[in-house]
Every structure is written in structure tokens, then in C-alpha cells.
Length: 291
Image (cartoon, rainbow, N blue to C red; front, top):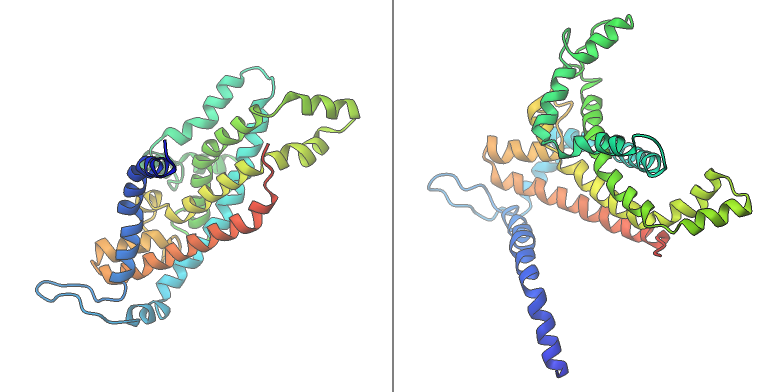
């Protein structure tokens, strides 16, 4: 086979995936950027080019800035907690202990539940006066509290739901990475007299960096695309305390039908995710050690 035939054969293999990627990823992004510079078409009035007017409107939008701030706090609260908990659970169930299979199943079960079902379960937990959490706090002598109806606790309550659901999913990747490591490393460290913590810090965790990078990218994406439990549990309230960026896009685009402004918000979200992903690969990618 000539080099030209090999080149053609390789591109033909890539073509189906490239076509799907262009159709469902690149084209929507370009179309959204184009619509962000136009007005929203209404009835017989077509969209017209407005330049940066939509972006200037964004700068003066207080709800946008609140939703962005809420989303940043949400990301800071859920990403480290879910990754740390996933690593802890994976390390625990990777060892030889009774009921290991049951523990793995228990940790992974929240992942397979639909987000709507998870939101309804936790909605029952947070119900004032009658919820499971209220029954526990009452038994401990604490006063009743409306967890989802208070500005000070609503966003934190949503963070707990996200961590509970995502940690088991990330655990699977860490568990697979731990099981792929050679047992000779632990044996050599034991012979040298290294403690478990020293072995984890200097050997295990560096070898888990490829998995950590993959999990971190997914955790960041999940932190900015979560909208299901907001719709079911709070609808952005109280007083926009749980208004996340994607839910705000959903409201603008499908509730108020302002597609042009929704396109502007979407471009901001894409810019944030793209910048964070590049930063992750630039700073963390240098510390990744592949076996």
C-alpha cells in the first residue's frame, strides 16, 4: 500500500467521528457565536445585526454576575470534595476487607440513578419539619431549618447532592487505576521500610495523576453543566441564591425566549470551560507521569 493510500485510509477511518464532532460540537458553537451578535427574531421581525450590544447588556446584568458567582462557589465546593472523596473510597475498597463488593456497589449506586430521581430523594431529606435531615437534627436538639428556603444554606444543600452523586462515578476511575498498578511497587516500599502515607504520597498519587487529570476535567464540566437538580429542588431560589449559569441560560432561552441573549451567555460558559481546560492541561499536564 502506497503512502497516499495509507493517508486516504486513515482519513476515511477518522471521517465518521470527525463528521459527528463537527455536526454536534463545532457547528453549534460557531452558530451560537454568530447569533450572539444578532437580535432575537420575533414573529415577522427577523434578526438583525447588533454588534456588541448583547455583550454590553451582559455587563450590566446583575443576575448574570450572581449566577456566575454562585457557579464559581458551587465549583469550588463540589470539585475538591467529590475528587477527594472518590480517591478515599477507591483506596478503601481496593484493599482486602470483608464486604468489599457490597461497599463498591453502595458507593457506585448513586451514580446510576437519574438526576431527577436523586433530586426528589434529597428534596424529601430537606423537607422542613418532616424530612429525614430535620428528624435527625430535631433528635439532636437543634431547631428546625428550611435548608432549601434559606439563602445561607440553599447552595450548600445543592453541593451536598452533587458530591453524593458524583463521587461514586469518579471512584470507578481511581479504582481501575489502582488495580492496574504493579504490586511490586508496594512490596519494594515495604522492604525499604516506607510508611503507607509516604508510599501513597510519593508513589501512588503521582502514578494516579493521569486519572486525576481526567477526573478533574470531567468534574469541572459537571460543575458548570448541572441544571437538573436546580430545576427540581430550587428553581434558582431563594432570591437567586442557587441561580447557576446553565440554569440562567435555560431560563433566558426557553422561558423568556430571548435566544440572542442566551447565545451570549452560552459563549461566556464556553469561554470559561475552554480556559479552565487549557489551564488544567498546561499546569497539571506537566506533572502527569504515565506508566
